[in-house]
Amino acid sequence: MKKEFSQNLGFFGLFLCMVTTLLVLGSIIYFIAVRGFGVLNWNFLTQVPYSAMTKGGIAPVIVGTFYITLGAIIFALPLGLACAIYLCEYSPKSIVVNIIRISINNLAGVPSVVFGLFGLAVFVKFFGFGVSILSGSLTLGILALPMIISSAQEALLAVPQSIREASLSLGATKWETIKNIVLPTALPGILTGVILSIGRVAGETAPILFTAAAFYTRGYPKSIFSEVMALPYHIYALMTEGAHPDRQRAIAYGCSLVLLFLVLFISGFAIFLRQRQRSLNG
Amino acid sequence: MDNQIKMQAKNVDFFYGKNQALINVNLDVYANKVTAMIGPSGCGKSTFIRLFNRMNELIMHTTLKGKILLDGLDINSPLVDAVDVRRRVGMVFQKPNPFPKTIFENIKYGLKVNGIKDKAFIEQKVEDSLRKAVIWDEVKDRLNDSALKLSGGQQQRLCIARCLAVETEVILFDEPCASLDPISTAKIEELILELKKDYAIVIVTHNMQQAARVSDYTGFFLLGELIEFGKTTDIFTAPQDKKTEAYITGRFG
Image (cartoon, rainbow over all chains, first blue to last red):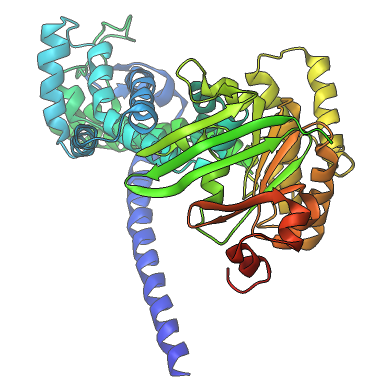
């Protein structure tokens, strides 16, 4: 009887923690939705801004964030995956490789503004890409790399040795085994890493501050060398600059809501892929 | 009756790091015969069978001394590719390990990595292999289901079918019934007896009755040494070594 009581008390404690977390999350969404919903309409999503940002829509801003995020993933996913495959499957188990692994994990803890300065020095100045989609994507890609590498490594290590052995025992080479058996099995885990990075990358402000974002550009970006408006920086700019703080604040909340939905949309696609693979994996 | 030697272990010593797991093992595997390896846990029999398709080299810090011959060819010679060895010497593992793919793709995979692309041939081969492994009737209507949905015994027969599809010459069974119920075990034993018409078969087993039922030759391992090797009937009725006798009469192990 006493045991059961303490157990129920424990469960109740866990339940409270969950409710608290949900409340915090819910209130964030609630406040953003309440304040931002007013400005949301079709024009807001499809038109370019005018009258010092207080009228029109934010279409180029959405497009800008979409491009930068997509660019970052296109750059970081193949590179990160290749790196994880090498570290897990090919590299000899040595102290050097361990140090590399630890360094990659530490890289994930570097403040994002540092990545921004790095991007400014290397991509904007040294390679001469200027303040552009390309520079911003590469900078955000580097920010996402450690996340993608470590989640891919976890996923690869979780693939049971027994099915690798089964593949090799049928006369498959090591690469055939990795390509046909290990990678498809690890895909859900790899995609989880991608989903997390998308959320982080789309919302980052500091790395694009010096490398990609502009407060205002006329119309849509023309090429990967164009400056762009991006949602996180746009929100920052609307709240700190300009002559109409009241009207701008409402738009900033609208932008936040759109950013949430954009991340949800991109992640949704990755979740869809992951689900499909999971059902195949049984 | 003439016995043709298919594989041979010659003066085999094997080390995990500094620990010696096999001590000077000599053993012949005959074509169209079932060779069983028995012995208590940790005696080296699983380590030994994995030498026949070079599986142990996947484990780091291991050393092999002596030779493993396949039709007289030293399979560990630098001129021989492990991939070619494994195409001729297949393996069925202790735990059923189907790929997380459909039943059809599980069988097709071995053909694919061996360079076969002809669709009609693959379909025929998949059916033939599943029939030979006596699982066709149970899965023919759901070839596109995930292999992981099958029961343990069915999964193991699927793994055998997968091995049969690539037309190896030798099949190694590493305790294939360890995780199966008695009915599945009986099915697999029946299958092994059927398969020896076409293959040289090596089986590691914990189960002495199983060795007695399916094998023609038996080797008894103890602490890394091959204590006794001979015809199964001889080993079980008139063992030469006292340790063998003690083991098969159940006094230890």
